[in-house]
Each structure stands twice: as structure tokens, then as C-alpha cells.
Image (cartoon, rainbow, N blue to C red):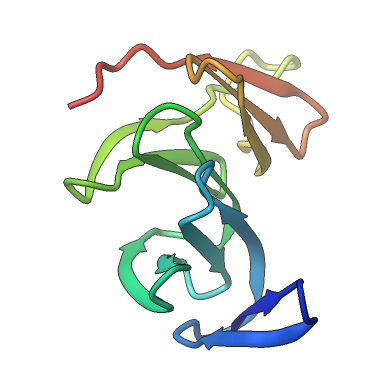
Length: 147
């Protein structure tokens, strides 16, 4: 459950129900109008903070560990397992899926992929930073044109 509080009077404004299982991450859009939440149920849920309504659910293949909105596009990024999905929120279509390629240093073969644990955009919205469980921050240049 996502709880929205009015910080002026410290009262609960609304409860957003819909997830089955714990939540790992909640993020608010740059303009403050939207909230996204994700966790154990492998779903990213989008909420309208002005109207207090559930807008959409984006399905994933694994537990969602991090979410972040693009600062200059109507996009939401969701980290799950080793992958990151970038969603266009207008079309509800996936724009891109980012996956790190990990090579085992001992045999030269592919190793077990690390888990993506955190996400952050650069202020210009061109670069996505992703923190992984192998102690590496991966930097993605996102040059897909906005629709």
C-alpha cells in the first residue's frame, strides 16, 4: 500500500491499494503529479497524486528493485533482476530494455548477472546511472528519440 500524506497538517491524504506483496521502491514524477511504486509482485503501478487514482500497471518478469522518472520525457524506468525497462507512459509501450553483459574473468564465459538495485537520471535526461549488486555503477547513454 502506498500512503500519501499531507505535510501541511500531517494527515493521511489517501491510501493507494493494489500491490500484492511488499514494496521496494516509490518515486514521484518531476512535476509532482504522478507516483510510481514497485516491489515483490513484479508490477510497477502508476498513481495520479492529484486525483488519487490508479492510472496503469506495467508488468515485469521479476521483483522490481528501483524506479525513476525521466526528468525531460514522459518515461518511467524500472529495474528488475539484472534488467532495466524504460516505459513511455503515454503509449504504455516499452521504449528500451537495458541488460548488462557480464563476462567471468576466470573462464571468459558469461557469469551470473548482477542485480540492478538503484537508478538515477542525469538532469538533462540523456544518461541513466544504474547501481548493481557487483559494486559497479553502469552508465547508459539513452538516445532513443521521444515519440
